[in-house]
Length: 78
Image 1 (cartoon, rainbow, N blue to C red):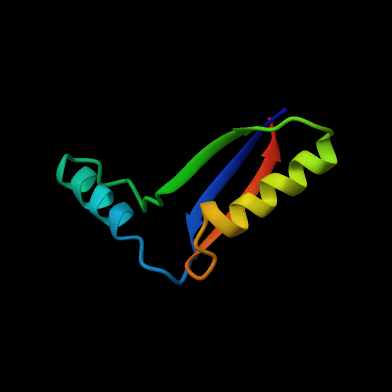
Image 2: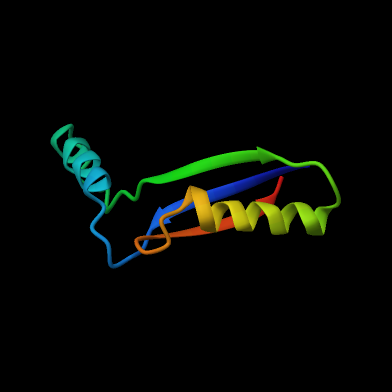
């Protein structure tokens, strides 16, 4: 089964990459753009049943894919 993990900076952490993209798009004439938030997307393929697969993906996200001090993550089955 395939699972998706989305990793994003916590709201209280400054997203410098998102801010740079926002400023560049504003300079290109897209003034209506409010903000940009950058995230990372991982697609993991796991064998086994759905409950075990999701548990493994959540464990991998918490321990290896996200820095839980500064980032949050969400997991879902695709």
